[in-house]
Image (cartoon, rainbow, N blue to C red):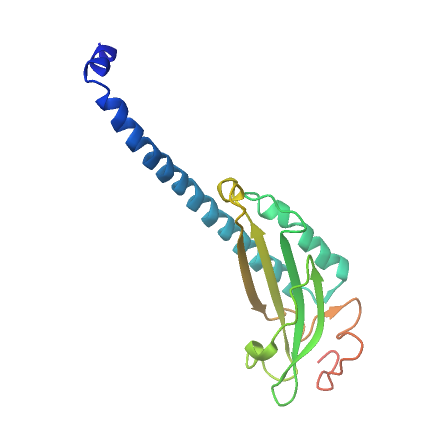
Length: 189
């Protein structure tokens, strides 16, 4: 019955379908694309926050522990495939001199280099003789839809955390990398 009606209207329904179908496909694809992007952004934000929260709870870290947090990204961001060329992570300890000026104590990076950091945004975050832990994370991904066009999306986050159990978190047994002098820090204080 429906087939006869479809044939009898002279193809009008077929033309209408041909005109409406691409719009419907674009709308459905757009909904899936935006849902995917929001979910990946949410997982990335959660990963960066949890990495910083976990690392700031320690009084001493090693480079291998930071590498482990970097490697856990694929388990924590399950929506997107995470490969080493997609994720960059930098963990930096910033101390504060007596005059309140921020000072780079140490930095560990995984993935491609995020480049130099500007410590001016850390000014005033903590008191002299204290420190903060800075987490810089960058994630570049493409959905199945944007891969076809060679487009990628890059998410960046910079987060600061106050060490929970010490004034400055040591890295590989040292409060600072060689060449850095932080005279205002007293061990055990």
